[in-house]
Image (cartoon, rainbow, N blue to C red; front, side, top):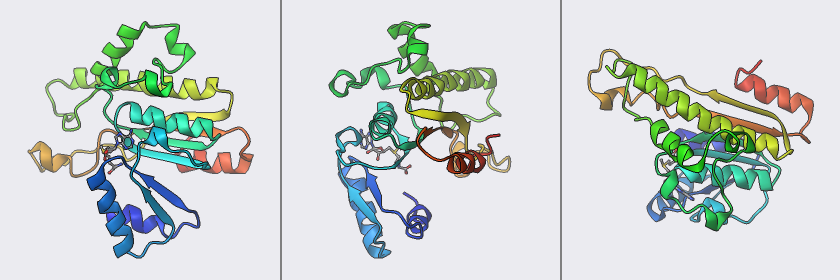
Length: 222
Ligand SMILES: C[S@@+](CC[C@H](N)C(=O)[O-])C[C@H]1O[C@@H](n2cnc3c(N)ncnc32)[C@H](O)[C@@H]1O
């Protein structure tokens, strides 16, 4: 996690719990919080799906595959605002869904349209490469992958709406991916930001209208 993320959190008057199941990642974040003397962050090395406390807002950033669904599920269980910027989706088929009550497709909407095997094909096709650029000769294929990914994100949105807990749910993208034409290597291009920038947001019904409006404005949603 970037230092700037951590430093910006310390000025917000809330308590944050940062979760990652990787020992190495966890110890890095723990050390940074200690070095920066940040007091409103607790770090936890555990699976998102095993987290047991209550919370009001859940944010997942590049949680791999089903981990994004686990994060959204935790939010729905807690009637919490969710903001999920997902990651790779290609391995969803191989992840163990049944243990954690996660079934795919997520929504009744998509379940009524496609079969399970078609869903896994969609996941594999939607797993677009972070280094592929719009200068690619396979630009049309890249766009198709983007559309497939959007279907998966919309499936997650529909799942939230079907829960009856949310009345404001939307799908957007943050920090549009821009290439640096002066750099030819894909490594330089990806320094700018990630094309994995699909974001889904759900605001619970019980939140007040002015907060809902402010959240939509923050994401430039009319
Ligand atoms: C692509 S990295 C993103 C890291 C970080 N969120 C960021 O944006 O810099 C994905 C991280 O998710 C963690 N992860 C994957 N599945 C998880 C799960 N089920 N529970 C908790 N952490 C998980 C991995 O250990 C890894 O550090």
